[in-house]
Length: 420
Image (cartoon, rainbow, N blue to C red; front, side, top):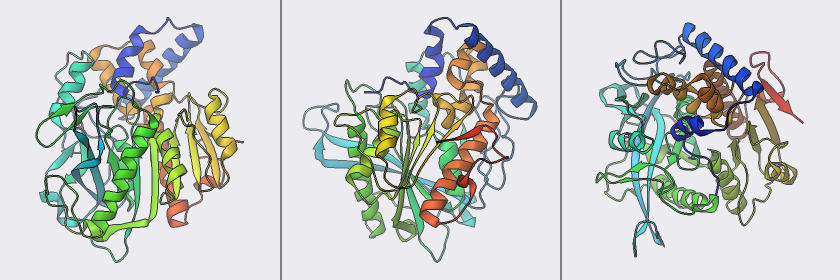
């Protein structure tokens, strides 16, 4: 089991870390400077953290400006975004964490390009309110702050198009939630992908339609367990594409959703343990044509095997030089492969933590050292640009056969190194 906590818990747990060395103090000072620079540019620095919208938010804004609420940057693509939540029940799989005889239950969000009439539908929050409150309580956060608005409209009809849309599935990290990479999810969706995010129940915080909130209480939840969840979700997506509704409560699906799914162009990505489950799913199911790892450690039993399909590593703390399992996985890749790494990136730099934790730092009073332990020295605004560009380029290349960003280093992204 990967001993990496959720993005919020990790930020607060940094206060219990060993004292920083002189190098760590230098990182902290650099991080504080980056935060001040981000603030002056409109990013999540040490001022102006609550309310308003983020920079570079086009037609897909980041929701209404609200005092006392965290913010997200809006995506850059041309399409509006819709989202729908599904409650799925796997009756073939008992869940001992839920009690004797109880089946495995999952919450899933489906993000999709929405039609122009979507504006009359409600804006979706980053996380359901009760689950958000439970998360803050679990980490002893004494702050009355609301989750960010997203750019999505809940239940809006799917944008009409002659062609079906490629589909990407997301698996979250240890003790986290399916919302943790919303910035990347929205970016992909705004450029014409359907993205499906999965809550791994009892390995994260999740809220069900009846109001139940489940917490990360599983004593042992492995990447193989996450992979089993995703394999079940892939089958339910096939149901939707065939015109069936797999939602346990038979809540209506967004108009046009089934007809929009192209499951012949299916990708997957994940952060940390979710990245490991991405590799495992590709090991056992050829439906997934391309996989992307956000700093996954690739630790599992049975171990991860290689694949002949495209796979990209975006590494930070779990680089090939630091984590033997990642080096072993890299050596087993038999198809297209690429390893990029952003200078100054920390483990959470490829998810929403890089943007949200600096905002939380001001609210809860994190020191510069504590903040640096989580976000490293990578400027939050630059991290968002990297999060937007490189996953999109990867899936565009392998699911749409277009794009050139991955052919080599780019002057637009001087922080990103291509590792041999």
